[in-house]
Image (cartoon, rainbow, N blue to C red; front, side):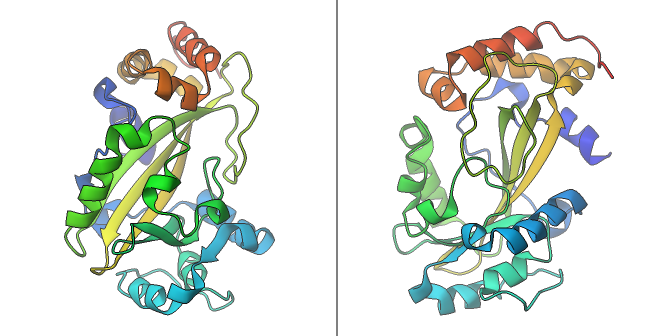
Length: 266
């Protein structure tokens, strides 16, 4: 099964489940890893052009963070051109990478983030996860405590994966600022999914990887089951989820669009 077929047969909103949920599934490095030349090219371009925005480390913890990163069982090529180990390691594979200090309020202490979905690494660095997630309306209230418990109890070197999803008017990887939301969804929009891998590499540090996947919204016309589940998932959103999703106008426009598309227009 191709990656595209797998996405549509197993979309992140499958069975119309809640927007905010952990959805962690045990996995292995071998089954999770994929090649993605487009995402890798974006990463290397961003590292060359926007390094100060894309890479940051809490300097007083840099040595212990570097040691933790060496515990990752990665076979990718490591660079030596950048001042931070996290960037040199991340250079060799498509996904973004962040590090959480489990023992210190679960703080975000390092990151190489070249495909953010409207968030800024420098604004989040050094903050506990509860503060990192605070701008997401309702997220801490719904699953914040569960996130913290899962991280505390996660076994070492046992990877888990999850997915989330958004709908955007473009397919730009390096989206560090919120875009103006057009009033009407159309066939040129994209589903943006973040496929995440979490692994506790030591008693102190959790490392998570973020792989961004785009699919044209129009392709839902060829996948009626996924389309129906997405409509139901949208209809089940509460006020907090709709507000963070882009507001009531975007939300209703998307439902209206999804109920009308049939087949795929070239």
